[in-house]
Length: 168
Length: 190
Image 1 (cartoon, each protein chain N blue to C red):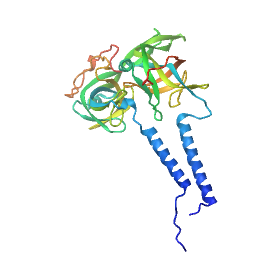
Image 2 (cartoon, each protein chain N blue to C red):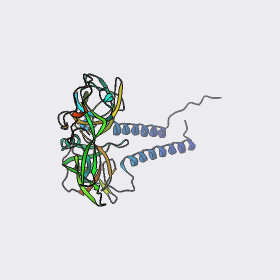
Image 3 (cartoon, one colour):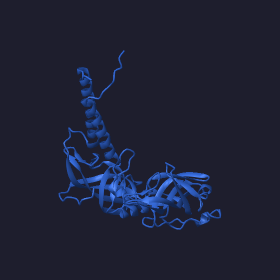
Image 4 (tube, helix red, strand yellow):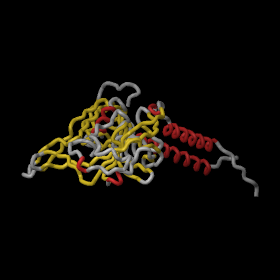
């Protein structure tokens, strides 16, 4: 059967559409090609405020385990928990004389998680391997093996030492 | 009219190959198992589930031995092996002395249920058939004659909080508690 010019043009159009769909899917998953990213190892903290005793113990049990995002749409790797600090929670009180004072909340604890992550970075910031931004003040819904949490990113610092193979 | 028989040319084969490779690549990317999911074992765990704001009548409807459906996906079934009732407390500002005080809310109760349920334990989760058992995540339980929202507050012996003595242990007999026996110390379920 003879290959007509019209047939070739249609085939080429289909190939272009398929390739564009593949490239678009890859860009959607890996991030846009216009944003140059480099792999980066970084350490960051997440502050969780006012948890109860059971959750505080759950965070302590989560040391040296992996953490993940846990909102409806994202399950990104958040890295390995390398530090857990638990201290009594405080909150402010507006006094009768119109001033503010800080006081400990009974049976509540503030938790600071320190995590290390193999992610990516560029001029816009640090990102998880799945391209979610990790920046100071950012709200993260996450979980460890034991605890679901809602916390805020504290500081982010790059680390030069390569993370062990197999770690996030 | 002569029958027109279609034959694949080389461009058609290229298209078919690209599409097949894309499907295989996509399947590999999305379906590849994660390393931590390879090590898994199924076993019973016990966890504590806390539900607040109940009347005494409702709190006493949670009884040991009852089957419960756990989670919003209604895919996991466990069993209540212990049920305790506490007075509900809340933290209030003491605006004269600059301190937080814990006070009992009258006629409101907290039930803490210990539930046994099979899960698959991996390095990263206690995975039920429908959802993970995770401290702090709001979820639901349903049983014969009740359904309620609450939170998992402890798993196994590792993370169980130290609670005060409950106001009574009469949930099995259905006796009403003596309200004068309520403790006013801090701690316990809130």
